[in-house]
Length: 96
Image (cartoon, rainbow, N blue to C red):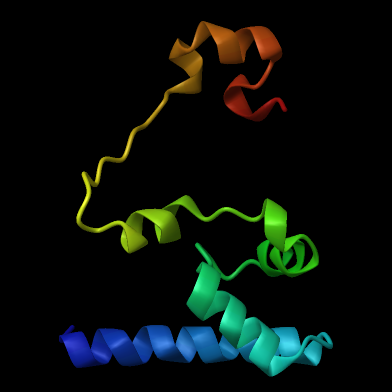
């Protein structure tokens, strides 16, 4: 795919998501502003609803990293099966 096709693809996905959320009763501008200002890692209505209802609690790490492009961009992966602290809390393998 060319860059223009990729941009159009994601713009279409965003519009479809926004339309779905407006059908659920949310304001178009609230959704669009939230996505542009705070970012949304995937098209999951639960993430958007939680972010709109508790904006102080929503922290998109990917958006924060994108805003700090001049700094070290390092993504860490913590394997819960190897982390004894997570195993002790019962959070490994999706047991939250």
